Length: 419
Image (cartoon, rainbow, N blue to C red; front, side, top):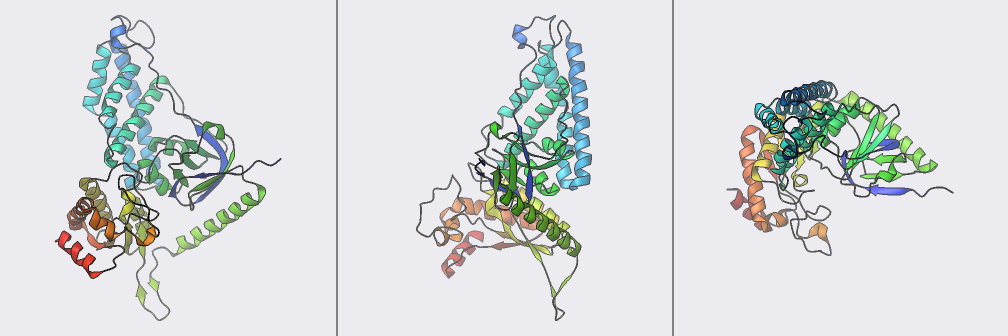
């Protein structure tokens, strides 16, 4: 009897098709190797028995050196496979590990009677607590950076080796760190599906730069899926488990066609676009984040014709701050230099809903309270975005697009807000 095909849904990070067996990554339990300082006598301070603080500090420093070496390796590999901006994630990680204050705090925990293992967890847990309740994208990424570094430090200290996979696989798990992305990349990493994650995480940025099909926010995954055959469709945001022969054949054909298309387009990039009657035309890109700007430049785009800013508002519990938006818009404008960047103000509504904006169900949501009508209703959000855009406009060639305009009154009202 044939197994029934199981369909999973998520948010696509990068379009593409991957076919392979699932490797399910369980979250490692972070157990301390020694008791808390108050439960440890002064002559028993470490993971290996009766030793002194100097021994544990030496163990800690050796783990830090190994972790920095790993991050530098990831940086070099990312430079080869992606771009300087994506690789800078790992340069930033190495700087955190070299931080004098962080080192001092961990040494203080050891002097109080804890092991190197306990010191790492204690200090990182205290730092992570500062970011635990933040909905700001910047702070969420700093939290993920610290979690990643804690894991790498503990792995180095405990002598845990990286997985070595000899067969192609699709990775599943709660979430994936930037370091995981580069660590698995050297093997046969086909794609990934995670329960958490977002379109704007460092991992998502790396995925797009490298070209790995990926889904995030897929709530249906479970460890029981280990070893099952999977088709990951990054175009539709779906994954098929236990596909039958016909579905496999269909997707292998799609995969081959996409590869042919990619090669054909690669040959055309950076070439001037000229019509049959000799007119030169510009080709602009459609993007949703700063990584899209990098891809646009790599492929010879003449500018950004549509920056869909609403994706910055999605998959979170609160709206992005003015400062967060300003930094993102500035980064895109600086990347594009003198080339035009058209930013569409948030077009939320219809199929794009956010939990912190209460929107009534409408008979025809595509033509209801969305686009400029929602912007004018949610004036505080709209003004914050306009301020961020105007500030960022100093760093490049910015145009602002107002979506779903239906009357002159909407234009005049928006003009008043901008002025």
